Image 1 (cartoon, one colour):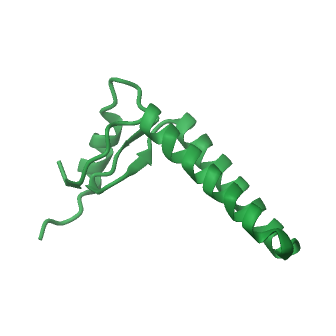
Image 2: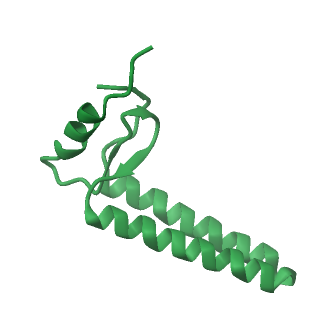
Length: 94
């Protein structure tokens, strides 16, 4: 099993000639934010997700609508990752 090397990961993140907001994860499938725009998108999603959870707790009679809102926020996040990030694929390191 390969050991996790922080220097390799830092090199990978900094190697961004196309200016992606999100780069492919070094291990696994998905993205990691690498520019401030990517981090801003993640922060906005986290805030909206948290507010939606609070609304679910306050308005339990509208739980379906609130879950739909969470689903929409998450779908938008994934769409932004696809548009502003590298093409995702399963990765086992460099």
